[in-house]
Image (spheres, helix red, strand yellow):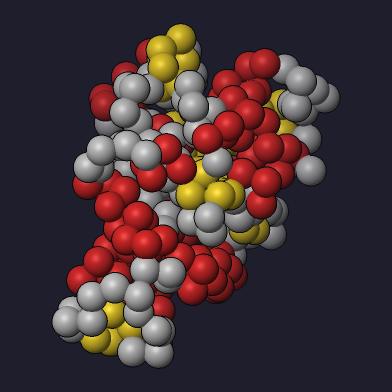
Length: 257
């Protein structure tokens, strides 16, 4: 099978797994990626996607990747992360409590219903670079009926529970402290599935064996993560957002399976 992978920095673990050669044996995997929110600055002409901006073309060149691909030559496409994550849901829960949930912490926060929470999260997902990219890719005649896989951003590392104050993970720690993690994770999973169906993507949720405490990534899958712009370099020591080679093997296998 021949697959083209789109994504942001979270695609690094898949690229590392591909370069290792074991998981992708017998398959051809190409990458069209850029750090940040996701792949932007491209143009679609017929079945070809081209890096239209110098920023995207330069990033691809630095990785030794072509700035143009013919989508008609691929059996499937995959979009990794690109702003699809649990973070927008947690951001709402940082401000509001949910009326139907029995809160274990502060109850003086303004309240909303679970229906409104779901609506807000659904709107946030539709406003992601992944949503816009899949919509563009579906306009390519060759991919009107071929699979486009969607892999959400991994949960933050469980290391955040033992680290100092981390703004990026504070909301997740509060969910766990207040006993709301399971409810929030269930809403996330259900709305993510609805989102994937809405945009016509094949959803691959985070592998169950990598999940800890409902909404975190187990340490064995989140240490020694690599940087997309240079796989020879590790993420900074305090990074809790990126997954490693062990995770990348599982994620790549999800697509190729």
